[in-house]
Length: 514
Image (cartoon, rainbow, N blue to C red; front, top):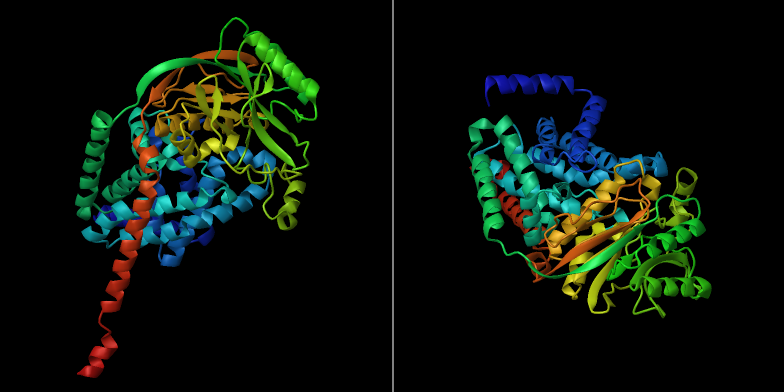
């Protein structure tokens, strides 16, 4: 470490001697990566966004303080990337951010353990692979639907970067996240530990060569025909009846355009079609008029008394055709309250669900006159495993029905639409993202946009010529091998460290034996 670097770190440590100042600084440092996501979309920032946070953690005077820096930084990241939830959850979003932020406490401890001021070249080399692995474990744990799901995975910030999308087809969003943390770790080493910078330089070169090799030689999907998909986006309307009337009016305008499928957004129908045959007949007549089946989404109590579900139903000239799909992954607090008897008070401080939705039990591939497509509903597009399962089950097209009407003037619509690009690239299947109020968008099998996006201020229809593709992507074939490999590396490292501690000679025993 140079004298200049030492002086800077000494000044920084002195200014951060207050635990409150340090905790606030950690939260701000952790929030920086959120700017790489839509709507700011400063995707390039993700390559260095973790560096200030890493440098702060490694300067911690104790391992406990490093864990706290990881905790508060994680809370800052969670709060920043979910900032659009504040109007709905109010102060409860801070509680949730602190709870989820605790997942980064072990990662903070690991940063200091491997990158402390006197770190050796071997420790730096370990950090290059173990810090990304530790980060992936955090992303994997918080991806559990009960903890909020995988919204804001670091790799998702690269949804518009073609080489990153190619990497996603190999190892999913997990591979992109791993490489981003690796890059940040290497840059932090170059800044703070120049005497042992060789492993960092090697890691940067390997990452560059590996990414280039994937870009040049990795397999790609092969285009195989196309289909015409129409999206109906009614816009913000005051009641369910006015929404349905507007959707019918817009869909009628599609007559003569010959779409293969018309897609409505989430909660586009507010009554159960079994108990309201007049609505079912109206939709069937609409399908006959347009000459296409219509995929609607029913958000209403079921006639059989099984509760409220969000159900995708394909409507043809003769009514509902084929299997229906009930949303499986529900939004915590938005569509149900976990442990309602304990946390039900959340309804009094925000817009939490006043009644729990009933989750579905299985995914479904629907068939529209030979076009096999897999429906996903809103929040489910954040889960890589769901789209991978649909592609592996024979879906030629992924269709997401969504509604972000509660978050119109926030980052949420842009963040949500961007997820479709990742899911397309991972699965080699084009994806249609249809919403009630925008942003609606379509992406091809490599995650590239098809046609124009329909923004949040529009009430309109859009027809897309969507290219289909054949082939099975490596990610669909091999699954989540990246987080599994990351876990293996962490286990091996922990076993090595444990063995080393056991074999370390006891000084007291040595003295007694003399």
